[in-house]
Every structure is written in C-alpha cells, then in structure tokens.
Length: 115
Length: 114
Image 1 (cartoon, one colour):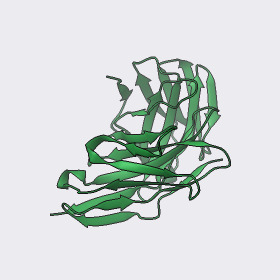
Image 2 (cartoon, chains in turn purple, green):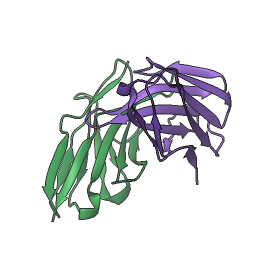
Image 3 (cartoon, chains in turn red, orange):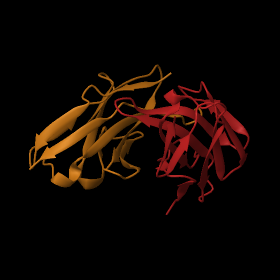
C-alpha cells in the first residue's frame, strides 16, 4: 500500500523561525500536495507539485514556499513562522494519469504550533 | 477556478436512520467529484468518486452519492447509519484535465447517536 510519511507528528516553533515540513512518498507518484486543516475551514490547498521541480500555488500560498528536488520528497517551508500558521498540515500524493484523476493518499499530518 | 460548498457543518442522526450530507460545487468546466472521510484521530481516505458515466456512485461502507449536473450537486447518502460512521466527511472537486489540483470543502461532521 502507498505510504506517505510526514517527518514530525507534532512541532512547536517560535514566531520568526524558519520551519521545514518534510513529506516522503514511496509509490513513485507524480502529484504531491500540501494542505492545512483548520476547524471549520476544512482543507485548504497551499501548494502542489505535478513533477520534480514543478510547483503551482494553491488557494493560500502566502507565507509559504515549497521545494521538490526529488520525485519522492515534497517540502513545505515557512520562511518566518507566524502565530496564524498554527495548524494541522497534511501532505498528500497521487498518481498522475491522463483522462482520469486518481485518489489522494494522505500522510498522518503534522500539528504545528507557533508560539 | 473551482470551489466546493458544504452547507452543513454538523449533522446529528440516530443510529439506523438515513442520512444525506450535502455538497455543491462551482466550476465553469467539467469536474471530477470526490468524497473523503476522516475518522477520529485518523488520516483522510477516499469514500467514493465520480469521474464519468452513471451519475449514481457507490462507495465503501454502504455510502453512495449522486452527481446532478444541473444542480451542481454531489450529495452523499446512506440508508442506515452505524455508530462507526461517526466521522468528518469532505467533498472535493478537481477540474477535468489541467494539473489535477484537488479542492476540498469545509467538511461535515456526522455524529451518530445511539
């Protein structure tokens, strides 16, 4: 079965720190996504990537950047963490197949607290 | 751009009663539609999806959804719920073609009452 691994389950950082959230998938998926999940707001797409070194902004990219140097790894970067970035961060991946849309496989999430 | 609206943030229902969770989408082009479920303290998993063909889609755990293009809806239904169905349900949409970006709704918490 597909495994999407997020490096940390819980993370506590201070305001202004640079934060790296790492995500690795083991099924050779082309598509990778970063979402944040907040109560009452559902999942909001931050960035996604459809190939190595390729990225597209999602709905809420402000304050975030991403890196995809290898196919299996997709990193989310908070250049200067702020308290409003306290959230659950979910990574997902999917196979890219023409003419259809394959299901997303999610990691278990990283609960980030910015103090 | 695509968007999804889930009007009901919480739906309480008695065990063995039927349930419908509502989802409406907005898009200027054709879409794929999905329902994902998140059980307490677990990750999200796919419940069912509509890509094309029959507008009635059956998923896991006895759930089904009907795609209605004229009403831009994709409501999720189950004829008889169990305690184990207590979870948060998310509707999602993706444009046909393009980069396969998936946009989620705000979620509906289904609370099954014994």
